[in-house]
Figure 1 (cartoon, rainbow, N blue to C red):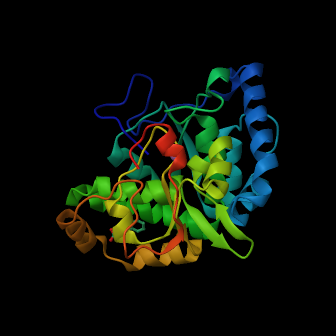
Figure 2: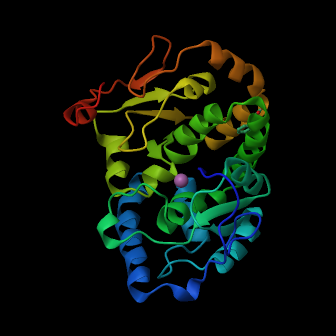
Length: 288
Ligand code: PHE
Ligand code: CO
């Protein structure tokens, strides 16, 4: 998501966008994209939601090298009316919401270093473009992201950004979906991570629980390692319908009266698909 305050850095526009400067990527940087792409492309056909895989194709993300955002935006615009614009990194919440509400996805233009192939804190172009953009070619998910931006502008005024950020985290970044072929991953943080693409579906450690809006808004999350709980949606249609039809203001108020839920906790009212052992997190010394 977003994260900075104040005014845009030098060289950035008032809306924090910058030129991608595609011609400046080195051959080594393009080769790093290809390496990351090939690794995920092998893994994902049996794991990612079909909508994600279709987006990779339609947008031709398998073409060699870091995508040029202008060419990518042309294809995306034809599919769903979205664009991809470059930003220097972290941007303020309200700026982030404003872009989404106008069907503009903000992406970092830099790529990780070869040492960061498996782990990075700040989202780079591979996470942002490979992870997020394919689903923006899906009309239903595209509408969800725009509605999320509008919901963010509203949450801003209600002092509830943190609640809404949790919804983003457990859907857009780390969501799982039920499908005819079994569980599938669709969250950008999972599909862009080799390790978590396997862990999220196959590992006995994490909980896999049914999606519930208020529950998600109460659940803290970790940004430093694999998730301890994942939430399952039935479909993008269902996710969009639930979020559009629900007035979040009363939910924010309810959440404020209730305690936060730790990342690994399972509640009596949860719909449990897998109760995790938390062995992975415990081995790393994280409280279960
Ligand atoms: N319905 C939400 C509200 O009342 C807006 C929203 C829609 C938020 C979709 C997120 C996703 O604020
Ligand atoms: Co992301």
